[in-house]
Structures are given as C-alpha cells and as structure tokens.
Image (cartoon, rainbow, N blue to C red; front, side):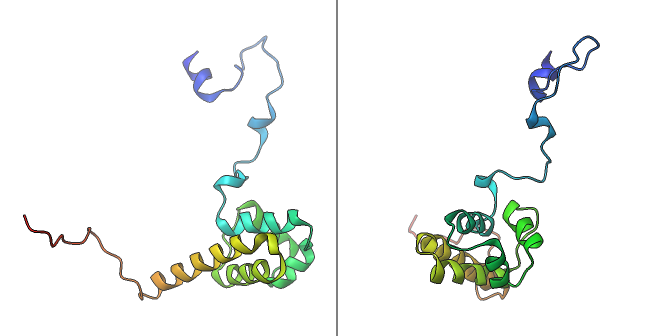
Amino acid sequence: MIVRAMTDQPSRMPGNEQELPDVVRTPVTDIPLNKRPRASRLVEQLLRSGMITAAELAAAIVADEAVLESYRLGRVRMPLERQLCLALVAIEGVPAARRAGFALRAQVEAELAVASTLTETHDAPPVSHRWP
C-alpha cells in the first residue's frame, strides 16, 4: 500500500490487469518545458511563433533538424557557440522572442567569463569589513 502510493502506479497483482497510464510510459529523457535549459525553451518559443521553421533555425545555428530536436527536448546540451547563434536569431529575427534572446546571450557571456577565469569564483563568502 505504501509503495503504491509512493510510485503512483496501479498494483500489478494477478486479477488487476488494468492498463498503465501514459505517464508511466513516457521516456525519462523528455524533460518538462519549465525544467529545460534556457536555450531549449528559446528553441521551443521560436518554433511555436511560426516566424521561423525548423529547417531555417537548424541552418541558422549550423545543425541538422534531428540535432535541433534533441536540443529542443533538452536531451542534448547545446554548445555555447550555437547558443550565441540562437540568441542572435531570436534578437534579430523574432520580435516576440527578443527578451529571451537577450537573456540567453547574457547567460552565455557569463558562462564564458567564468570558464575563462575572468570572473573569480570563491569557496567562502567574502570577509566582512564591518566593525564588531
């Protein structure tokens, strides 16, 4: 009884031959839209806008459509160079996605700054200079 409540699946006891719900059959790699990386959400937004097709977007970020679909579903992490191309497509080509394009570009720039050690990372919070 406790296990069934935790897994939220029907019991598989003999005599309970009911069909499992679709939620159980969905692959683990399909991530909900709100949990996907910013680049994946932007790809989804651009394709849903109807202002750019999947083939045009794939050509703009120098990838084929199958790879673009993997990026869109969040199965594969999009390289930073392609994320910059995606941000520029959103900023320049789709007015409804400009804000998301600027946000993605800022995130990529910050990630590059940390990776190139322009930004120093610390193990502890800074020392306080207040008087006791």
